[in-house]
Image 1 (cartoon, rainbow, N blue to C red):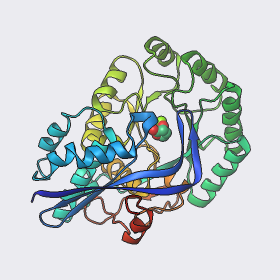
Image 2: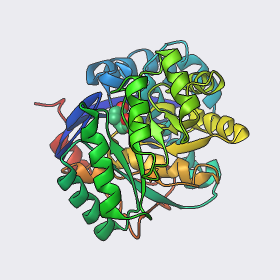
Image 3: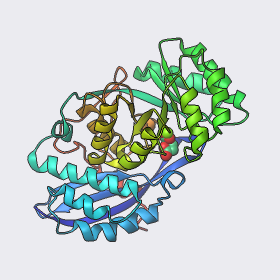
Image 4: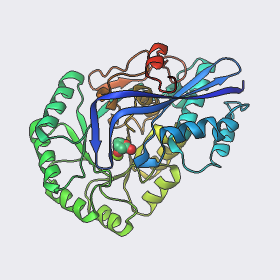
Length: 368
Ligand code: MUC
Ligand code: MG
């Protein structure tokens, strides 16, 4: 079996509720559907979310690399030679979500060719992950209502609160309102997307120390190394590296040099293969991992649950799987269901999902 064709199809679906956070905002999801077809007619699929404010990738750059340099690597390659494909893709620096999608699509092909779900091929630990929902910027009253409604409708019990605004009191009071309204049993953690300085982040930690927060993700810019290390040393809760650890090497650097004490793993940027290496590294050190969300479509979220459910260490805590709830629609044929706070990995072969061709025709933006 060899790869015959690589397609990169841009599509746009509006957000029903735009997501705002310290480093940017998403109003529409303008993603790229990657399809890799083999000589036997097997089609591997994956979603690519360009995030210029996080990785510098754009829709045009993703399409350019996938149908240019990466296509040259992929066409004629055997999908089972994954390490060979990776080594050749790695000659091009950057482009993390394009590379992550190639890895996922190749795993999808392997699973489909064997007739086995990829969550079982990878590890088969469980099929279900608890869901953590991400609350974007809004008023405290609106976010309390949103959290209540997600608890009632979906049984979600964990929320990541987007913070990083000024004055700091805005987010300190928001976090306090959420804790008071939701009670002590709902898990809350923060993500500032580098919005604060280390000193500001320490003030927020002090002001919220009685609220039982579990993690603080990217409180400040990790490249300001002394400030970040002081923050990590003074914090009683783990400081999570997300955009400062977009690869295995970055994750190791941030942890080993004291820049973070927990890791966000996003399959959108490290696929399954590199995510597994990050997971093994974290497990060996006893570092907590959070299965993160790149503001993923349902197709992207299925990849996250496929990976997260495959291993004991990645299934320990709630995974960020619900950003798709804020999107007006999706390309996948069989929508994700969140039941009693859990998402279950599909049982179909490969990553276990299929594209609704009518929806793709309606949302693709490469045809007049
Ligand atoms: C997150 O965890 O930061 C927002 C920006 C991005 O790159 O990912 C999201 C969520
Ligand atoms: Mg984050």
